Amino acid sequence: MTFVRGFAAEVRKGVIGLLAGWREVLLEMITFPLFYLLIVLFMGRGQLRADLLPPVLLGMVALTFVHEQVNRVFWSYLGDIRSGVLEQTYLTPLPSAASILGRQVAAVIAAVPAALAVLAAGVAAVALQGGRLPLDAQVIVPLAAIVLGTCGLALILCGLCLVFRRIEIVTQLSVALYAIAGGTLVPLAAMPEPVAFLSRLVVPIAPGIEAMRDILLGGHSLAALPTGWGLGWLLAQPLLITAAGVVLFHRLENVARHRGTLARS
Image (cartoon, rainbow, N blue to C red; front, side, top):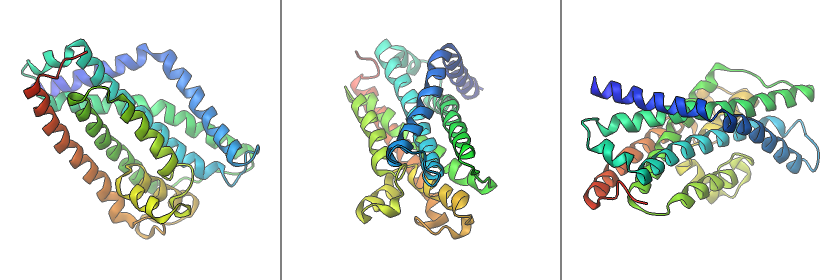
């Protein structure tokens, strides 16, 4: 019951923070879709080309989600460290796993509005061009893989912030790296093979984006994905990243306790 109450409290705190910052959320729901349209205009040399709108949309939805989810959970940890709240939490009987899981779920919920706004803008733009974004229930699998892999990435970054100072730049650089080399805007098949290999290996959104494009734009099934490393890697990669995140966070958490860095300026 302590675990359940702690988990529920963290989720509730995150939702309350989301509602309290509704102006910020509204601004993000405007700026991210505009950013998506500007990217398509840039890639299309001033035109919203019908052949660019759907593939860039799928990548931009994933990029928006990973940006919002990772940043929200990371800054919540960093804020609690600097205010001393996190150190006090570790002095209570509350299992740290409840706090970690609750923060992850709250961050996922908070990332959804901006991602949905990008999706809505893309669907509207495609419709204005006379097209239609197809629907397929199979896309739930790559979406779930993106969510799980992103949580694993967030655990790694949050673990680092428990031990190291001035780690904020790593979070920003990681999202920028995914935008450039993660297959979000340009398919990995069009990139140099070493870049595509590394992206499929370690970028948590890359296999999911490729699978969504194959399913929605190529009409392929999950069992016969023509790009990437297939269904097996789509399922295995987020699990491996999350497992690495859990192990690394646990070890860095112990280091922070030993060094006394759970509270610092």
